[in-house]
Amino acid sequence: MPEAAQRIHPLEDRVFGGNGVSLAPLDACERISLRAEEKATAGLGKAIGVSLPKKPGTSATKGEVSALWIGPDEWFVTAPEGTNLESKLNKVKTGLYSAVSINHRNTAIVISGANAVNALNSGCPRDLSLEAFPVGACSRTMLAKAEIILWRNAENEFRIECWRSFSDYVWKYLIDAARCA
Image (cartoon, rainbow, N blue to C red):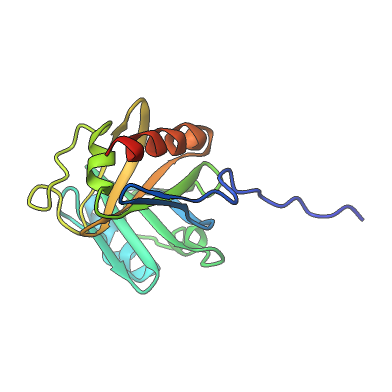
């Protein structure tokens, strides 16, 4: 019997640290692209165990499940592998919604350190000051020429979600930006 295929992380074994910036790829996780009308949001939040944020650019986390508001009627939901978010969401019977697994499409990078904001601002048009982009803020935006989801986890730490096919480009861009930060 043939062995089951195993997913290889696109940034496996990569780390970077220098000039006040650290980069690390995150382990695989469950990711859901969730679109929903208002009357479905309460039931969807209950199904995954975290209320979906209603305010633009905010996030909500309970335990290891997080929901990010990234557009009108659109959330990006993450949880540890094996959580079966998609099956939990697909049991909700109230309102119209779409829950699509994007586990294999995306990957994540954590950028942290005293110069993380400087490195990000070299290619991101967002104002990343704490006043404009506080801890918990999130946004679909650009980093150089790649679309990303940017999520501030701490004062000097961000999670970057990008398509796997852009991950090498994003990683190398961030290293170059960190060296100049």
